[in-house]
Image (cartoon, rainbow, N blue to C red; front, side, top):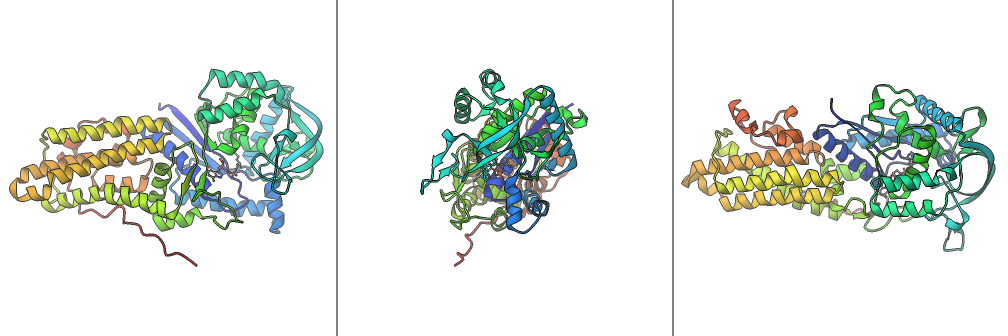
Amino acid sequence: MADPYYITTAIHYPNGKPHIGHAYETVAADVIARFQRLKGRDVRFQTGTDEHGLKMARKAEEQGKSPRELADEMSGHFRDLFDLLNISYDRFIRTTEADHHAASQALWRKMEANGDLYLDRYEGWYSVRDEAFYDEKELVAGEGGEKLSPQGTPVEWTVEESWFFRLSKYQDKLLDLYNRQPDFIQPDSRRNEVMRFVEGGLRDLSVSRTSFDWGVQVPGAEDHVMYVWVDALTNYISGLGYPEEGANWKYWPADLHLIGKDIVRFHTVYWPAFLMSAGVELPRQVFGHGFLLNRGQKESKSLGNVTDPTVLADQFGVDALRYFLMREIAFGQDGSYSPEAIVTRANAELANSFGNLAQRTLSMIAKNLDGHLGAYDPNGDDKALLTTVQDAVRHSLPKEFEKLAFSVGIDAWMKAVYACNQYVDEQAPWALKKTDPERMRTVLQTLFIALRDLAIAIQPVIPEKAGQLLTMLGIAEDARTYENLADEGWYGALIKTGYRVPKPDPLFPRLELPEAED
Ligand code: ME8
């Protein structure tokens, strides 16, 4: 039985169409899910939409729609984007689904039974954009002196009857968790922020609202709906069938909640406290990735720089976009993108290096060997190249991906691609055609073997193109895992089948910048 691995993204607010930050987070989670599958883990991957709360209710009202109409329409755009980007999710959860409501109410009852919920009155600041309560001392002054949340969003004074969760009771237990399990919050910079926040003292948390009704009803309190973050966080277990411990419960505790840096507090303070209260095991790790900026600036309607990720995928290709996102930005830090940067990176590394290596190797095999590879008898140069490639694909890339250091892992892979291109130039197989055809064959065989290893390793990042290449190489779909990388007999077995390498189709066309629109 394969070892279960459960990864989740944040669930996204469908109050508008998805933006590039949503694409970034979900692509990264998909790379991890695919990587763990290739390593042989039994992966479950969940993403979805977070459909309740005041932010959704207000946006719907603005548009003259019901919140459900808005949620149905926008949630569909998220799902379409994720399908376009080849996201291999197992469940796309919507918090308006009945099983999610039931799970949230079950969790609530557990917290209540544990004596952690009480009725009181909330008086304080609320940011609808962040769906968050803030203490007076956390607020900052805006340009006109108005009060803003620490994220720079407007806050409003709120007074209403509310249920409270005894968060204060969990301060020591949480600090103990962070100390015992230093990996619980990553990267370290986020861990330090959270530790400082919790050390500063925790106040009980308002967990229900009475001024509107778009949410999950509080059990036994008709006029209360749950604070949107209570039900939102519960998605991670409702998607596994909580409170039943059915077939999917084996995936809990989650191995990784992948989220953005702005919502680390919800995931590392509130969520573990709720779970402790309800007697549910805690997730193993929460990773707060950085933000993606458009030429260094946050995207916003007022700046007019909001880019539809669907358009980028159509313009540059899904795999080029995925590759760029994982290659360009040091994961965990903020990063910037622009069409120029995508084109430059994809052309230099995918079209001119990896794609070109595949194209010239396979064309020469098809043309000069009539597609027949034959038995392999390498010399020292050939073996040295294969050692370089194997070291990158079997050790460096997996080691870095395991740490979520994607750009470092891809860099190691790209160095192996460069080594192959340098080897082609040095060996000059086209010149050997007349002088030493047997040596030409060995050089082409060496490159063929290297290409198979490189393609298997990079599948998590560019699944479609790597898959197409593996098909051209004659590698069966069930022989493309990381375990297969260590299989020494594959080449001999392939030759025995009489496989004939076809004339290749180009994998990565050179990209051009779209014409500027005025
Ligand atoms: O926060 N770059 O939803 P959301 C990278 N519903 N990531 C970004 C980003 C950017 N520019 N902008 C946002 C919510 N994100 C809640 C989550 S989870 C139980 C509930 C990330 O649609 C953000 O950090 O505002 C979050 O992880 C995800 O996108 C969804 O953001």
